[in-house]
Amino acid sequence: MSQKVPQTITTWYVDPDAEGRMADGHAPIWRRLVDLIVERDLSQKCVLDFGCNRTLLRA
Image (tube, rainbow, N blue to C red; front, side):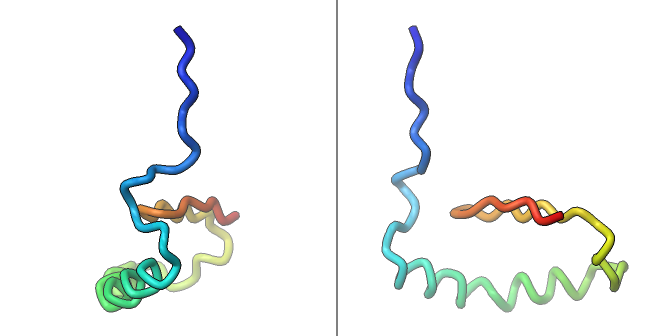
C-alpha cells in the first residue's frame, strides 16, 4: 500500500509570470511583517522560509 507522494502541489501557480505577480502583490504585507520583528540582526540565526510555493532553510 505504498503511494508515491507528488513532489509539487499542482493546484498552485505553475506559471512563472503568475508567481511573480503574486509575489509582487504580497511583498508589502511581508515587508510590514518583517518590520514588526524585534530582532534587527538575524545573521547568526537559522531562518525557515516556508512559502506557499517554495520552502528553503537558510542557515
